[in-house]
Image (cartoon, rainbow, N blue to C red):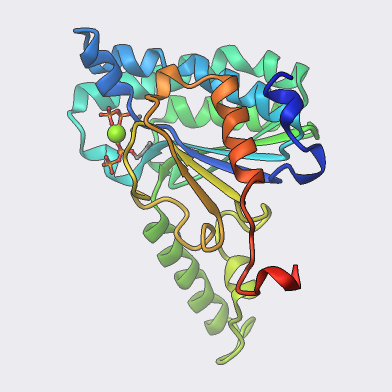
Length: 245
Ligand code: IPE
Ligand code: IPE
Ligand code: MG
């Protein structure tokens, strides 16, 4: 039985989030510049996107650039931005063909204008797609997102749209950039690092975590299927006991 066939289609996580890590180390192992790793990180994005469609995942969030990544050497930041522009440019027809709606989270206003324009174009062109929502986390930082939510609440308080004592988890989450997406049920991080690096701190409160030593450029459809199978072997109790489930 193939890996895809081993997946129980009735228990597929609705939302999977991935921290795509290890591009630099992958390149270094081959005696190459870090950017070579980033270039080779594009194909696995295609692979997981296709795999997500195949098994019926509805939302896929990919951590592509963090607020902290701005602190990398300028040459690497520039090369990453260039890669983003070129990739988005080339991928829109494939997104449309596969019914994939593009969305972003993060402080996208801080991205170069060229990147912003390509993103807006991709988002607009794919807005009617229904099979999968692909959410790119770009210049994303969870603490920034949470502070922004608090600032929006304060503005609404000043305008009497929200009152003291009214904030519940459901209302708070409606102020986050992920307001229209369900929480991820599964978080995957590649490259052996076992940390969140400021990714979706609120939204991952009850996610299953899967850390794999595979470096991102080596990540394949099969690795994604294995992660789903692993996820399906776990018991999600949400505070209850087994007998109650
Ligand atoms: C992940 O790979 C991609 C980005 C953060 C943009 P890294 O560039 O972090 O690769 P390593 O962790 O240095 O190997
Ligand atoms: C996290 O990876 C950000 C992305 C994958 C985009 P990093 O490689 O930047 O994380 P740290 O700094 O090692 O925690
Ligand atoms: Mg890294």
